[in-house]
Length: 191
Image 1 (cartoon, rainbow, N blue to C red):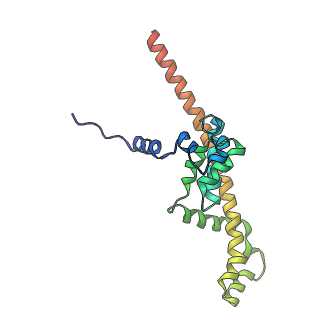
Image 2 (cartoon, helix red, strand yellow):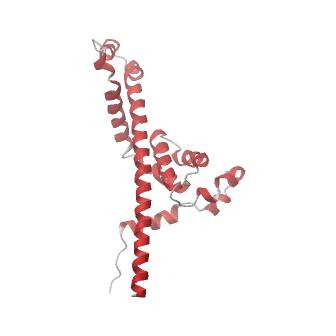
Image 3 (cartoon, rainbow, N blue to C red):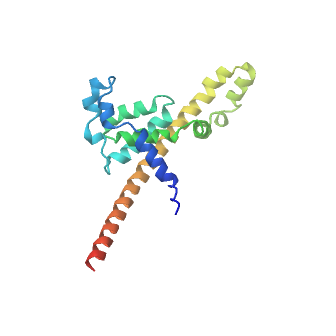
């Protein structure tokens, strides 16, 4: 009888366990030695109902706002917020080479809609300035950058709040499922 091939989630979980650095491996890292006592505090590595949603929200913030060093920044920011470091690090993968351009385009579009830079001012000065100067740097500084930054902040806030709420709800549903399963096992054993 052939063995059943494990599912995608089982394989991803196995890969995650193999790839994620352990607390002990970080403890022996020479770069972390000076701050190891703070970074390796047990409460930052436990999965609790408060630390996991904080880690998800923090991972969303660092993943969307910072294009580089996301995992390092999420670990650093997890210290004062008492967020779960592995969850914060894993959540930064919301941005990757496939999703980052989508986030950037959406942030430019949302920021442009929020600011309505050109439609509120008579004569459309930004479009006129771009055509007159034909300088893309001027357009970038005067029109695109404010729209992009405002849109990115809005997307970050929405995603981090939604991530926090969904992970807190998911945690509650998971615990309720565990309790129901436990009660069914007890009832089956007694009855």
